[in-house]
Length: 131
Image (cartoon, rainbow, N blue to C red):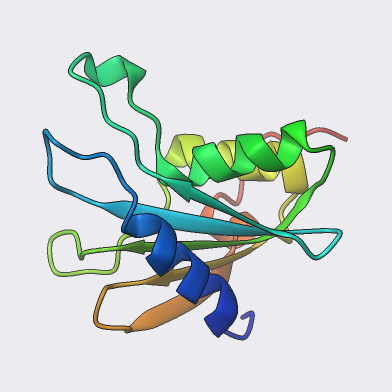
């Protein structure tokens, strides 16, 4: 398992404060470390038309891709879901797999600071990815 990256989690906490969540109130913040060492934040952005909302992780991952970089680690901070740490959804894991591969590290944390680590490949073991 990857070692928790406290700086990346701190950046995700800061991004969480900028989440736009007037409908659910479920603030989520993310941060992605790139192959060039950059850290790119992302926050959940909701919309009254639910299909137009964008998860924090994908906001950050898409920004990384458009900057011409590749993700190497992803941090997500959100309140717990059903008493458990909140992990990236399947769509976000698929994007991380496509853009960075199965070795992208994933760090999750709740606002109290309890955290866990994994990789995209562990969380989405049979996901299709580019060669």
